[in-house]
Amino acid sequence: MPANLPPQAQALWVKAQDAKTPEEKLERLQEFLSAIPAHKGTEKLRHQVRHQVAELREELDEARRRRKGSGFSYLIEKEGAAQVCLVGLPDAGKTHLLTRLTGVSAASTDVPFETSKPQPGMLKHEDVLIQIVDTPSLSAAGGQHTARATASARNADVLIIVVDGSRPITSGLDELFAILGAHRIYLRPTVASVKVERRSTGGIQVVGQTYSSASLDEISRLLREYGVMSALVTFTGRADITDVEAAILHGSVFKPSVAVVTKLESLEPQTRAHTLSELANRLKPIPVVPADAPDLVPRVGAELFRASGVIRIYTKRLNQKERSQKPMIMRRGSTVLDAVRLIHSSLISTFQYAKVWGESVKYQGSRVGLDHELRDKDIVEIHA
Ligand SMILES: Nc1nc2c(ncn2[C@@H]2O[C@H](COP(=O)(O)OP(=O)(O)OP(=O)(O)O)[C@@H](O)[C@H]2O)c(=O)[nH]1
Ligand SMILES: [Mg+2]
Image (cartoon, rainbow, N blue to C red; front, side, top):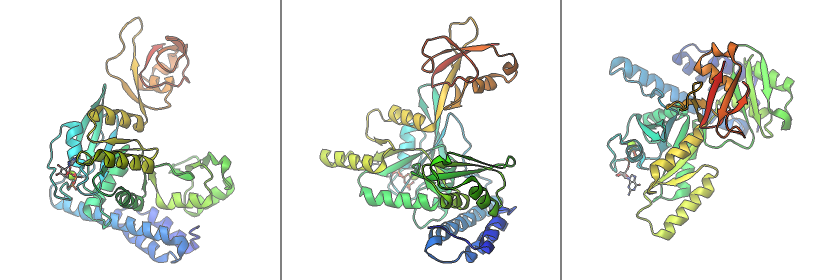
């Protein structure tokens, strides 16, 4: 159902977006909240704005504490090929898993909400390092732990959903999804969705709306009403104009994820198998890895690498046999041009061709141009 906001509420929303400080934003969001008419169509929106208000309050409280005290920041700076965040309900086994994946030791007992701030470690996957961040547990009641965990999850490239296999699966997942959803974090690309990325210039650009009933005019008009003059709008599936509005208002994010199931070893073999297949069904297409797998670290590493959407590219100097030891980390879909830019931008003007070995070419050592798309583990030799 569309939110159909009256112009006055729309204007207040625009004002809230233009807020210069978190204090101002909090105040304006509260004004906006009180201007949203209460009916079925605005239920979700009201719920989410309320959450946003609560999050901002937490953030402000935290900033105040920081000013007084330790100067500690709760967002972990990214390192390695990707940042992965462990999320889950109390006592699911996140901290224990951090230790198993990275060797970092931290208190992990049966005290719920034991972890109170994010902590990082590095997992080695083949020749790359993947950063794993342990977070406080999520709770439907919200609060500081949940705020820190969801902020970390938003910041991460990939999530590991830690599921306690000894507890009822359905209710546990429902709770987890409800909490993440309330914070506008989604684990699966929805069948129909819209992503609105704001830009400073360039007007409204729309891609992928072939299957949508929304016209470019309609989309531009709606965005303008909300004060968005330049943005890249990406449609997936048969999303319509109400999905555009939802994307502007809710700022949802999609996070690729991998599930790890803990505490399976005490289960009867049959119950164990049933639990795993129930989870796989429910979470499809998210891969599910049992925490008692003997090859846990390489398996999780491979799944995380796949989910992260990055590839490794090696370089080779002219007339040398060996490729570089260390890979360059690039986004999937990157081309020779992207690689050349990363090596040295001055090479672009003198570039003649590149020779490539690996999966992206049919014949090893083929000559390719700048627009050639690279694959994981390709070796590139630039001729310039
Ligand atoms: N049997 C078994 N116990 C586990 C497993 N994973 C974790 N545990 C135990 O479960 C308890 C909770 O584990 P934690 O790693 O502290 O859980 P958490 O998700 O970090 O929970 P918070 O306290 O909210 O941070 C600890 O006593 C762990 O030893 C597992 O795979 N099997
Ligand atoms: Mg913990």
